[in-house]
Length: 360
Image (cartoon, rainbow, N blue to C red; front, side, top):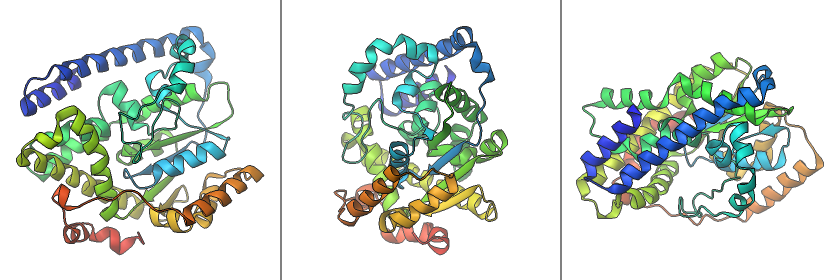
């Protein structure tokens, strides 16, 4: 509840009174209460759940708009040994809740969620594999989504204040504990391997390896010159609906985009720090968006070997089809750096450590 009040206070202070802010907070509270109660009911109706163990889970982590969603959904579509989560699982993580919602499932399968995000940038649906940052947002009103939707409007005193706030929002140990609870329900009465995909779990890396010493973590890096404006463009669409972004004065918009930029810069530093400290760690694999785009065959072979994916004729055919598709692919997305008060020179200077160490 404290988080909700903090968010509401920030929104009211920044934009003034809007009834929809109270609706958002109330809806979030209802969802969180429903999730908490139904999760507790699971142990009454599914006593065998207490014995479920998660063995050798796999994680996929990268800055938003780095190719993680594509990689995630390709693996889920073509590698049945894994079990991942979707928006439906985030809204109804408990087995009890899923049983309650069984009759509504056919209608939800047909529902379109195009109003949430521009489908040209990010397609979503109740039963499409999705980032687990959504699960944390729905349960705790915290994490990356809370940060980029709300706290990027906040005025921070200095760099230290900003980074402390970011670590507090994104690096909480309870996030891993909660995702563990959701996942062992997802693989209940199944021999599938837990597959976790998130952006912000880079801030929880130490919690991951503590909770799952045998976990394998795939990290994806993309050229910041493209990842950052793409990410800003995606979230700007939400901000237009939530806070009428285009009608705001330049001071507010500059604050928003500047905090966003600093978030990405800190994220890449965090990513680089973990990679640098784990060069000999065989449970970490680093690939780039460039490798995925230009050499999908060899790149996915690396992923197959790293995750011990079972090769099947169907998988080989899917890889071949994807290679052919990517050879003809041309992006529809064009992003203007000036729109976000950014320049190519600034990005290349600030992210020099990325260009020095990675062939992005």
